[in-house]
Image (cartoon, rainbow, N blue to C red; front, top):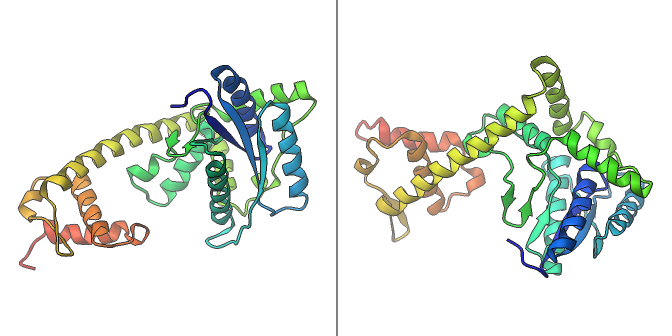
Length: 287
């Protein structure tokens, strides 16, 4: 979707995934006539984080990325350290993209990251949309390594950095079992030992298929909403006869969309809420 002269930014932590991505981006961008830069987010959560960010910035410069920017963010810890760090990181990357007039920020998530996300969401009892996990393209965010195994990406990083006399930084948080993502990563490794090396590939493939299913069901629900829902005078209504025989996967999506249209906050609207409304439709007893 980019044209020669456009700016693409790589989110780089200094770890092997993002440095492999930075090296690939620098190589490709030069041949496509793109301007490729890097943004290093310093979460300021570890001693020496500023020095690590400066080292990562220097490596990105040697990989021919320009401009290279270090963004220091404040992590407030609200909602848990992992979640707060992610929110702060994405906010910093968004601000940098706006400043650089870039419509694409590349993230170094791999196939293994996708599999870990699926496992995390499975444990929470998620539906197809949530289990579809990360999209390869989602607005500003692009994940070009999402179908590539982590081992392949790390080999690439080691090869590229060896030519520079460098090694990727290993974040000690990636081995800290306080974080759910670390525990899931270790579980996935254990599953691979017990069930075979194809576990991560299978989970990532499931996410891709579920994304196709969720997209199709959402499209059907959106079309039904346009056909049968009336919005007038601050109310949202539908004739229950129009929902007769509609599969629950579509009907509940329609109900959820109606709730949001009347003012429900999406994050506060649970599956239980939607099913309670659905029961009033499908188990009608005069109410």
